[in-house]
Length: 130
Image 1: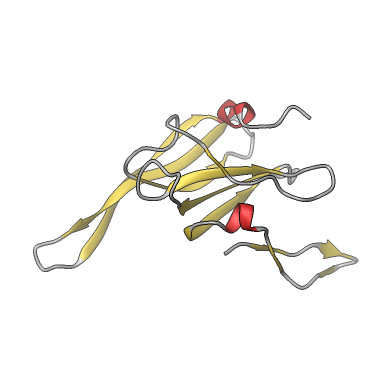
Image 2: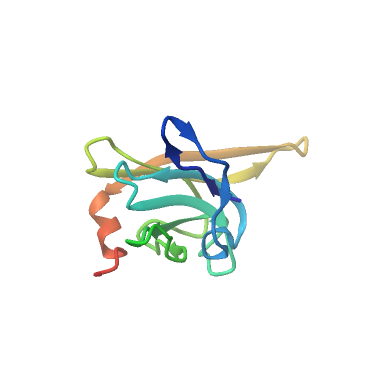
């Protein structure tokens, strides 16, 4: 599950677990928070997903709380596993990994995937108007 800790007067406060609207899922991992802390992107497996793990986004309200997680849809997600979202420092591109777990002849599993990118403007279609 994801937690947050505010940096106040040179110290981090005790971590606080984020709401069920963020933490409703399995294998919650790889969070990326915008430099201005206005949005959070991460991957997890959830019933409303398109495949294995999908990439989700949440926006921060003016009061500091976070909106429920939104699946980033078929522009990003597929029936495979999408993970490890990251926006470039200039804010122009969203990178992520897409792949799947392959079972070898000896029964061991191996993740096979590659990095993809899209224009980071895709984030704005999820941002609430208010």
